[in-house]
Image (tube, rainbow, N blue to C red; front, side, top):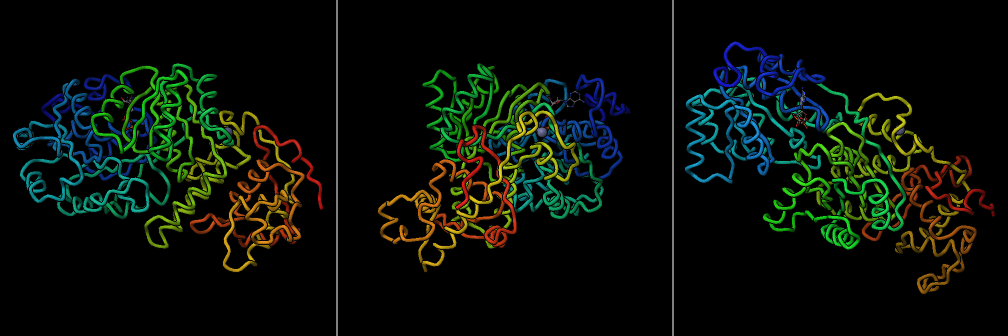
Length: 530
Ligand code: ADP
Ligand code: ZN
């Protein structure tokens, strides 16, 4: 870059002030910038909104040549480049949206040394034509954005990212900086290994987002609950509502509109024009709600998103953190609200069982889901849980999550837990038959349904032993037993099975502490032992 906006001989701080108009670096930015300017490789883990872009943009301006930025977010390249040009930075991009002539112009600019930054989609680098082009020009650095896309078991895996390891072999003298907002140890390790960055220096920022309030509520009537949350706390605010399915997205968006909340749907089933229009409205308007699948949000830089709501359970704590992290980038108070119920667990497990991937993959996915469940059911600080998941220390209480603000009451649920587990044991003896939560609850409540009579379940000793609690309470208990690993769900029918941890409970060697849901079940506090 050197002779452009950056100006020859200018230091990093000078560029920060003159080009970007900021007074000071934030957090680890300065350390990364200095390291990369000096020619070092770097792996940068920084939360969304932490300021990752400057970590490669400034070195690209200070070093000779063009900073090549690899990003999967093709839809955002035009915006990113426009924003840089507005600051006087000479930026361009090459992706599939350019026609031949447009591409030729950008290539010529690059070869003439007239670009500070060149954005490329990862699939471009598979083409020999692209690497040949880069070899003919001068590359200041490679920035690999959204580097977690190289992680094979992550939620955003892109096969093209695997090919990026060759950059280090082909351009050993060009510094590489990999950046991501995903920070589990496993992902970090995969980035380092798969991109061949063993010699890189790691820069890990704090992942705490203190202005985001974390809240997880039991789900009973999700759309109504969402509406109440919006009306009471976020009237007129911009926000994102995540649903698992396209159908859920459509229904929820329609519901909100009917109730007078301005909302638009966003999912991969909508045509590109509609998606782009809805995204543009969200970025431009002040108080629009986007109801979306997780297809929405990656790379979206809207600082004043005041809430992120989940109507379905995210598949992992990582996903939850990424999605909620889109709230409150401006540092002002924001809410992460999640409604979660037993049906979520059953549904997610079924998806896992039916899903693709080998056994190792399924095991990993289960572990991710279990960690997410544990976060939902925890009686301690949610923030501390999330941060410890990322291997970061946190205080015991944060004062800005639901469990810190109103510590959940717990109760001794050993006896009801034993009732559920013994019912599951009894059913297991019926060879070949598979029963889910519904049947267990019917038996506990002593309901003579057709299915109960068909299998003679009214003759079981456990039939009716749970009549002291209501159906909703039993479902809450099953949900918590699942989250505590005392029960497991198997197979496509959502069959409940015992785990290794169940036996001590059945033998009364272990107590089970359950949390009362927001509205504590009345009869549940002191269940009568039988
Ligand atoms: P990330 O890519 O990590 O999500 P960005 O690079 O998009 O974050 O930066 C987030 C916001 O913070 C942007 O609006 C950016 O202009 C701003 N920002 C970044 N660094 C600084 C700084 N040193 N001083 C002030 N604002 C900054
Ligand atoms: Zn807390």
